[in-house]
Image (cartoon, rainbow, N blue to C red):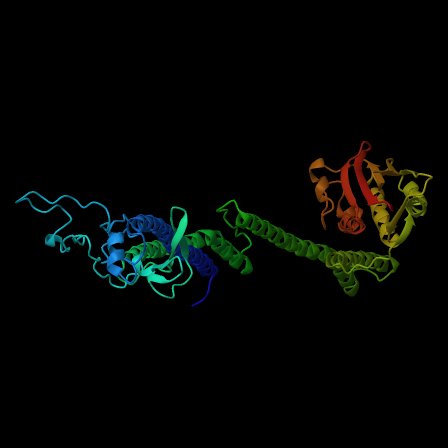
Length: 505
């Protein structure tokens, strides 16, 4: 049988309940037995003091204890005058009738016996007290027998009556007119009696009640443990089914929320993971489709050019070779960009970290693009701080970020426009802002321009150049430096790209 989590929980709860209830039952039974024996001892000490008073009165009458020496019947006469409190049960085992105390009066002549007595119920008739002067009838080795555990000696320590070698117990001095005339010793009870004694029967009934209650509680605990295990593991079973479906590729599977505990949080995490996997799979398929489309375009152009040359439709002159070279360069850049993104995703893109002054890194790039901007009919201006902005980074990778941003602005900004670059610092971060003029990008798609192979219809098309991977590469490189890059509408009418990089502290 496979030991499932539900069975483990049920067994664990059952074991704990058995241990707790068993310990409670054992402690309760032990305390009951010990407390009951202590209670009987306290009562017999009271009987013991009563016996001492009777012996003192008898000594005053007789003048000595010679009447008691070796005379059990004499001790029986004294005990018959007592009103014992300790022997609350009949020694014959009937725990329902007190041994001492008043019996109900006999029924009138011809009337039936009172309820609860008589041979009709299979009970023996009440026993009559022994006549005065005679010893009580012998008892059947009952440890509760008071007389068998009392030892009496005279003033000189000579035994008058009782066991000769009585263990230590309760001791009392018998005094008459202030003088000690004898000593008494009572051996305390160690147990409640024999197997048939009333006290033992009483304790046995109580222990049986405790045991029965314990068994009932354990049975209820087992049922509760089984129900609790099934209730707790119901969400886990649902999670198991969902994860099994996800493992089979069914990424639309979602776990139901059946509770509000930690299992529900786990279900939320599983659902978030499923959504991430589904989105990743969707992006992967879109990426494959886009890459296939991007590769197909230059390959189709190259194939057409070559076929035209082979068919003699076009001459193999410098113009044809230059066209082929341009398509090969475009294809090579696309492959290089895909390779960089793949390396960045896998964490295999290497960086050479050292301290950089961002203004000194950015200035040569801007000066190099100034002639190209003039050739495109654009006004390229910048604002760099005189104070150094130091950070830890890779100069080559950051140079690639700035180059891609300037390439986009120069390529997609209409002639007669302007491109503005500003460098500053705020909140412990360096902030590079690149803004250009019209045409702009719709605000609804600004968050998508950093996606791979994404292009905006209209102004920014394939005819204007680019593979749609430049901004995706910029985002990967900036995030590798612990920074962020965002796009927003520019007041110049185009796009505003803001790059934030943490400064060295």
